[in-house]
Length: 179
Length: 270
Ligand SMILES: Nc1nc2c(ncn2[C@@H]2O[C@H](COP(=O)(O)OP(=O)(O)OP(=O)(O)O)[C@@H](O)[C@H]2O)c(=O)[nH]1
Ligand SMILES: [Mg+2]
Image (cartoon, rainbow over all chains, first blue to last red; front, side, top):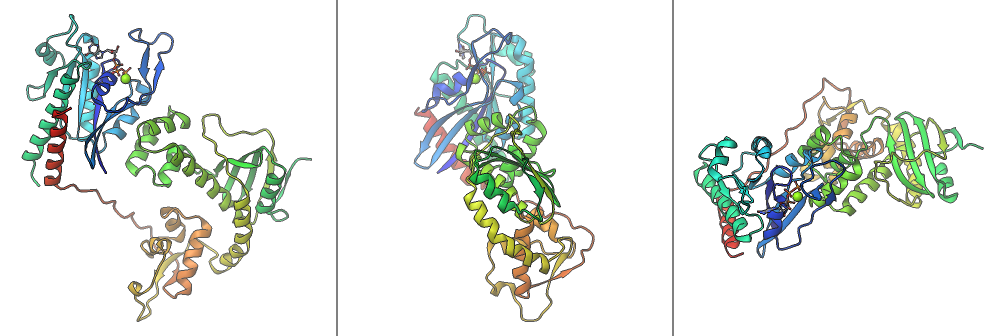
């Protein structure tokens, strides 16, 4: 049995757990914990350790989706998780421009760990105060070659689309690379 | 009366026997040739151990038992210092890098190996502290002492003999230049091969032991059998040699492409 993995990362509360949950065939194994004291009052739980989802591809291939832990204390896991990944998805909450800078910095960090293709998902596009994707491209200072796509992590089709776009990018990269 | 004394009068095996029979809880502190060792027991079972300056953090133990690779180990050492062993164990288990059983096994083996090394200490003093417990952020285990005690008594005699044959590990090894000896025709064990692959006038036996993660007794045992077979000679070491490079795994491109295509086909049908 062969396994491959993709990493799902992004700032606190961007929708990483939701993203994985929408396509995983197993319940997302996550270690959620009540957010302590005055920590951001955005939601009641945060992922302290990590979540991972699983999609079986065929009889001898399994895809794992690893969500990075939300808290800074665990950011050493980023580098560990990034080893051997096919590609990564950076999830950004389109309704919270105050997190864009951090999203940008997470993206740069992962790019430094591994030269694999990646995709940026402008999440929560179903909410009325979501930014337009093209405005986000400027705000996130993303080159036009970088794939930035609208996303609703609660919607399975939307998550499938992001994963497929990432896989297309991986295939393209393989076509272009020399042996 | 406090339990304390000298290893010349009271061997480690005898001390363990007492701890086991009296189901003692506390810390055995031994000061000997390898530094200071602290071995914690709970109700007569081995719970935790620390020897000299040796790193006994979960990351180091997992690295030594090859449960994590050198790159992962480096990352954990550099960046996970705010995280306790208990938390680290949990994240690694949750991330699917290791199972809970593997964590426990690795720690049990490591702590047992510390005790085994004490068997080789002939000189030193010890005392038993009834109150000292392992640091609260560390993971402790439960290992019965019976097997260790039996092993210890066996090793005692072997050890004395090996030390006479190979008194110093600061010496190096070289292949005996006797015509007709061909390594390919000799059946070596895995341990022997590991040692053989590092034989070089610049590598002391101590360095080989460190690299191959063998303790003083294990390396002596292997060297002794190689000496007996006439394969090696003990020599004075030259200047230190560099470590051998680590090979990187390579993946074939066509296989990768078909793999990605399989992923695409499957996700389309989700
Ligand atoms: N409306 C809407 N809400 C979403 C969407 N995706 C996630 N959410 C909500 O946003 C909140 C945060 O989502 P999570 O999946 O927990 O975010 P996370 O990135 O895993 O958070 P941490 O692990 O704490 O960093 C939850 O209340 C989700 O239900 C989306 O596409 N649309
Ligand atoms: Mg989460």
